[in-house]
Length: 274
Image (cartoon, rainbow, N blue to C red; front, side, top):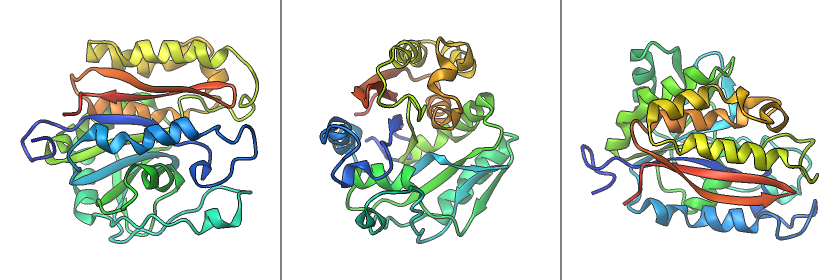
């Protein structure tokens, strides 16, 4: 059964996490239904996975450290790292337990792969974790570990980190990269072809049937058309690299796309859920 140790591995995902606490407020920076389609898709993602994972490992675009760092708090706090939103959005709760044991295993796997890694017993869940997962798994009853990006944002290192973490998929750990496939704050709300051009390239790259070819294309993402206009800084794209690396030989598919604030945003799955 999916999720059982040594059973069929769970898939990996790269999800868009929206804009701040967008799913939990009346949206006033555009049409009120701006985030409805994304929210509905996230709300159905647990059913897509099927059996409830034993744990979640989430790579958020909103945490960078000199070494890959796994949050190891037993009861992580929430980090309200968004600004200018309604007061009630700073009262949101998603109190999933942490897993110090999983955090240490993540550190050990990365270290064994020659990647700098450590744990942090104080860092909480930022909005790249608690906002989408409050929609996906609202009961907050699955042990969760957040993993940072590594400063320098080298895509090769993030693919390698995913490869190192692939064995966790057979232990019932759902690996999710949380970011946005389009992330140019100046581009939101403006009709532009850049997002469609880049999305077409990204989908073609992520769905290559040969994993080595897929990962090589993702590593060289800067050569994609409109790449730097879509991602002036790549922190929201790098969680995809971890998800793709952890996919091993499993193929990818685009399982969500929408136009949000005039730009195209997509989500991807690697390895088919049961």
